[in-house]
Length: 196
Image 1 (tube, helix red, strand yellow):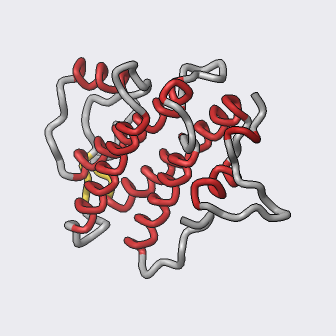
Image 2 (tube, one colour):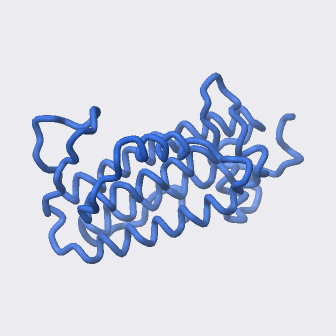
């Protein structure tokens, strides 16, 4: 996938394509990492690359549940899941979290394909303190825009964490992941060329 989104056919295609691009950028932060490296919290926060990918996958899944109006889980259960979704546990692998993210992305595409009108109302769940109390509904369009925003935010976090792990940055990682030849502009990332 290129560094920019391809030309899009229409609004739906554009929203899904921009979301897919942000997913790709987030996944790039994990390129070449071991499970142990994916768990590292290399900054002062408790965030890790693996934990961020797991969190974003969980968040996207939850928003599609909201679009489908799946009944909310009890608050305590939802809080426990939310807290667990921010870390890559010792019994989890980076490959497993990435595979789960692929499944979530496919589900999102399927859900959105089944919705004729992106203006369809998505009722705001009640009792969630960070949701607006004075808004009755968002639209499917709003949900997709929010997912783009959320994924991009965490892709940026993952970039910073990855750079702290081994010095790798986005475009050398993209060059390595896509097999670009070395050029005067960019040298693909390799484990042996990065600072210790």
